[in-house]
Length: 228
Image (cartoon, rainbow, N blue to C red; front, top):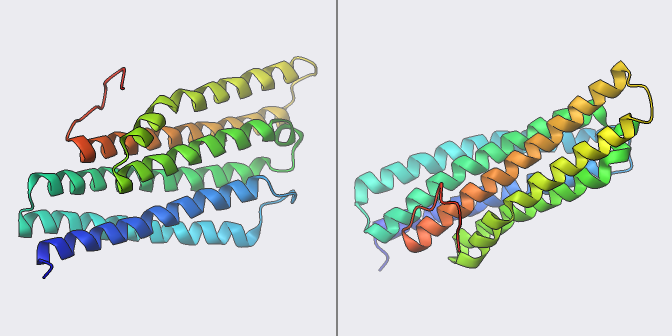
C-alpha cells in the first residue's frame, strides 16, 4: 500500500509534469507566431499565451506550497528531499521562462512586419529553437534521471550567446549600408530585447539542468566552470 508520503510526492511530480508541459507549449506557440506569415500578431495566439501564463503562475504557487508541506509533514528521506528541492528550483526557473515568453511577445508586437524583423528572422528562429531545445533536454534530465541530457544543456548555453552576437553583427553590417533613422533604431531595440529574453531562457535551462544533476547525484554544480 502506497504511503501518504509517497502519494504526496507523486502528486507533486504529476503537477510538475503538467506545469512543464504547459511551459513547453508556450515556447511552441511563441515559435509558431514568430514564423507565421502574418504581419501582425495572431490575436488568438496572443490570448492563449497570456491565459497560459496565468495558469503557470497559479501552478507555481500550488506546487511550491505542496513541496514545503510535504517536507514538513512527512520528513522524507534524503533522496526524496533532493528530488523535491530540485523540483522547487526548477519550477522557479520555469516560471521565469514563462515571463520571458510574455516579454518576447511584447517585442514581437512592436517589430513584426518590419524590414529589420524579416532580415533577422532566421537568426531569431534558430536562437529560440536552441533555447527551447535546451529547456526540453533539461526537463528530460530531471524527469528521467538522465545526467547526459543535463550536461548537454549546460555545455550548449554558450551556443545561444554566440547566436545573439551573430545577430548583432548582422544588424550592424546592414545598418552600415544606409542611414539610420528613428524607426530603424526602435525596431532594433525591440529585436535586441527579444534575443536578450531568449538568451535568458537558455540561462534558466542551464539552471534546470543543474537542479537535475543535484537530484540525480546530490551534487551542487552551480558556479562550477567545467562540468563533465
